[in-house]
Length: 397
Image (cartoon, rainbow, N blue to C red; front, side, top):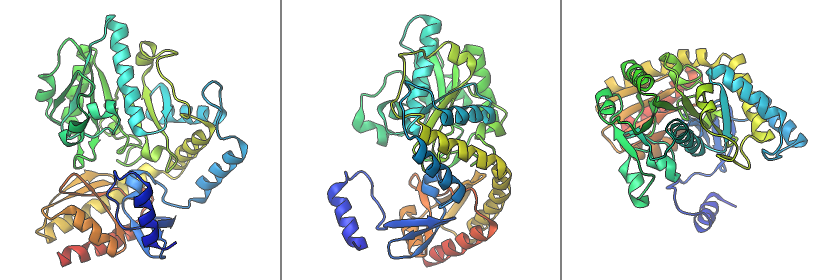
């Protein structure tokens, strides 16, 4: 089947909720992807910040193959060793105390919301509690996750959503403080806003919100689904601020391609929130995803990924700054580690499409930001190759 036939069949069979590029990917190797015509693409999107170790990583693949031959699924009515090992390692690197494995980031957000509401219910003996979220945030597509996503474009068709959610401005502590009342049970935000345009939290904002939560017994929920798992140069971005959440969410690179997410919490929260019957999942934390998470965490520690990200991220940042200086169509650069954005006054979707023609995969964030979230294993030569390809596109426009 040729590319056009594949696309026609996809458009005939799949629900049209994605505006896909006319590209049929076939396989990958390292930081490169290849389409069904054999064309090579340098990947600076990594499946939207998922493929931390790139493609066709032998040790990772072998770990999954071995688990497939052993045991795929049992349900959570029984214990399994891979997910227990994964949980203990995840708790160690995060400093959190309890973990619940989900199938996606959105489900991790749902679990975090339920945990916060149950904590407040246990404390106060009644429901009706409220959550403060951030404008321009993105937490997922389910009803609960949409309810705390600060983008009316995503929310409007599905109203009414979950009640009791108020929106403050990210990095504006006064706007958060003004919304707090006796019913506030949680404050939720991404440590680095992703879809909203690659905005890192400021240290002042993080520390003031943490102090406010401590004062009022409000739970701080940090969404590390995109910015976590080494992408910021720390295993979790909040570790760079020295501000620990009460609940955190993870997904994307947690499984490096295997669909898995998690929400984690401190023991204090666990002791006063979810109990048997409050939450569950059929697939979450099965032996297969447990083996994936266990291997990902092992590789990240052994390969010193965070140190590598800090080094290569600084190099990438310098090169992106040079592009801003060179091209009038670029107005700003934001980012940390290997999570960066270029603010453009041209249509970023067109730039992304033209980059594909040059053999470069970059994605967008919002309406005016080019997003760079490559595999965490890239080297300086890959940054140079990306800059050369992107410069060709910018020269043409």
